[in-house]
Structure formats: C-alpha cells, structure tokens
Image (cartoon, rainbow over all chains, first blue to last red; front, side):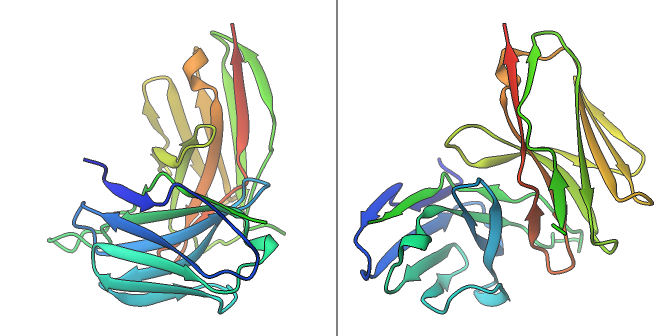
Length: 118
Length: 109
C-alpha cells in the first residue's frame, strides 16, 4: 500500500561503478521528482518529470540520468559514482493539476535510498 | 544568500512548552509555503500549508508575512512525539520545492 516506493533502501558501492535507483508511485500523480539530501541534511531538487517529460533539470552532473518509462515510474541512473555522491536520494510525486484545473501542491516522498560510495 | 533560511537549532524544550520557529525566503515571486516534518532517517512529510491569513491545525499555527518574506510555525503544548526536524518549504514557479535546512526540535520529559 506504500504510495511512493523506492528500491533499494540502502546501496553501498565502490567509486567508479554505475548504479540505478527505482521509484514507483501508485497515487496516479502526473509529476515525479528526485531530491538529494546531503550529509548536512539539506534537501535539494535534482529533476522533475511531468507526464514523462523532463521539466526541471537542476545543475546536476550529467553522470546522473533520470528515466521515466511511464507516469508511475521515475528511475535514477548514476554513472561513474564518486565519493561526493554519497547522500540520501528521495523520490517524490504530486498531482500537478486536478480534473477541474485546480492546482495541488503537496508532494509525497518515498522512504529514501541511502547511497554510500566507498 | 540561501533561498530559504532557518535557524538549525536544536531547540530543547520541556513537554508542555510553546515553541516558535521562523524562516525567511529570498524569492518574492514564491507562490506557496509549507512546513514539512522530517523524523530521523525518514522522509519529509507535509505538516501544514501556510496561508497569508494564518492557519491553525490543532496545536500548530502557521503564519506568512509576504511583505517581510517571513514564515513562522508555533507549536503549543509540546509533546515528546513532536521531536523532529521542521523544514520550511517554498514552492517556486517551476513547481519545485525549495527546502530550508531545517530546525531540529527536541522535546524533553
């Protein structure tokens, strides 16, 4: 019944490896996001997709590539992992616009993926 | 200057105390404002939205001052279960949330 789920929950890997984090939401939302929370607990937007289309792409190294196979999924692939990539990555979703054109603002977050690069 | 600034705390208060958190934001075009709560090693969860007229939800009261670009959260009659990090959050034009670094609250028995 989890609304926004992420796998894996923990990911420990060596520098230079390539890894993916998966995110799925079963809320029927049309917008999904990836956020990074660093060691200082600062949460920052990385990407946002609306109906499978990229709408936000912050200043993130191009080693990070989001992929949205459908509205319910937004995966994050990271190439050539570096020590500084160690962080907690949160996926989130929201319903950007309702049936009557009303706007919603609440974003629902997944449980996070704790990535440690050794 | 950070887009959203908060005092990191920690605020250590006894049960039953009233505690207030403040936050300032730099982008005057910001559209919506929220307080999220994040427990240790958990995801952020929406606590309440913040409206210009001020809004209350039980023991929690949120206020927004657009002229001063200032947001506040007041918690009355603090409970042990209120211990968490409180994140001030601003929604910009691109529908992305900008988070403050959070204020940690520790309610003590």
